[in-house]
Image (tube, rainbow, N blue to C red; front, side, top):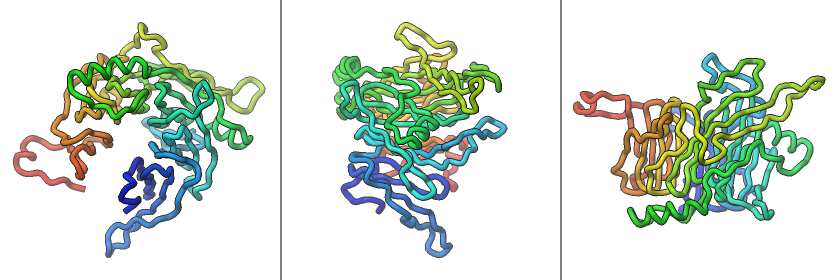
Length: 359
């Protein structure tokens, strides 16, 4: 029992034999270690609590590296993730030391009037030589911060830095029309959410060419809205090389594309329509497909080039609110008190003969 019975888990992460959980609306994060004593099986041992930073529900917990310079032969991130990111619906996000739980930095987001704005989702881009935090807001905006900017502000005692990018992705005023159409066709599949409801950092754009002397490359991010619409964006990274006479790299700037509704991307679709409820979770599958979950009770697979829905998974007894995809195994909720495990790495003969999940 990680949290109280009236404190449903809002976010969790298992990383490097450590479990991070948050439940209810207190904003508290609990840290647990995995202990296998060989006789009593696996046990979760409490290590510490991270609190007094967030005042509302924690919607995301992720790890990242304060200094990202290492890649393996396939270009995957192999840096030591020494920081923990937490983001809350109260509009705050924080960086913590994974080693001792000390607070490194806290930032409170506000709207154009200076009032706090709600963070609804978050993800981290680990594809480049610096890790970037992407935050989806209820106002419909995407904002991104580089770890170097945040750590620099923490060292100097400054408040939140200027975002590396900020753009409107899902306008809440336009979503109202879509939601009304959905309600007319299927009933109310929304939960009063608005703006961006899910965000995922996809694979690096293979069409972008970069070398050690190049100052720009392109990544992909995917956003889902309260109206069920999914959008794919190219993120162009500029700068980051050392300026002449300086030993430190210049500030990395991110630019999104398309910038206008009439613009298109080369080799990529921008808009994916099909869900009749808020998009609750997104995942990139091998850079060629997008996996999405929605409050309409379906999972859908999309082809990234043309935006075509390849297939759909139905049969859930309630709204699907989360998913986790790892190679051939997909884990979702949507089946009451059960966790649903989908294994795609079995043949039809194996399924007919009787199948048991192997761990």
